[in-house]
Length: 192
Image (cartoon, rainbow, N blue to C red; front, side):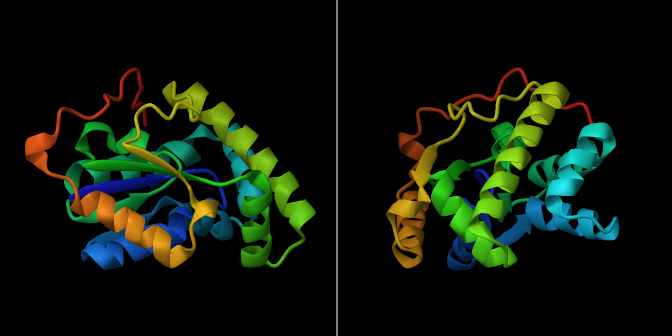
């Protein structure tokens, strides 16, 4: 089984993807972890690295190629990144999108990164604008198009334990005999 978890910064992707992988006995691969490692190697913050990536398309392409290869070659994994659903495409058994109001996401990021909420909100807006621009330019992906996802959740509506219950129940309720087809992922240029 390949499950993708996507969403904007602070939406709970990492926390919930790890817990979902553990609950289902699957591996976990985080595009965010890989991206932050790449930023730290260059002594940059994720926001700075995002903006640097606007000038050097190979950064995104290297990360996204690795994520696509994982989606194509591996099973029994929860693949988590902003583009995981798009990159995995037809290889994913489930494609989840997580989101939350910007105010909630900024608070989560501020707590995680030990910074002020206003700063986290400003940086998050810049980061999202930067990523939206690059995804469209590089791959013809409109990150705001949620039609490819099997389920989209506002993670601010449930506590962490209850939300994990919702995710596990969704996956466990799946019966291939009742599956009438997943949404196709079309028009993406996998040009790495």
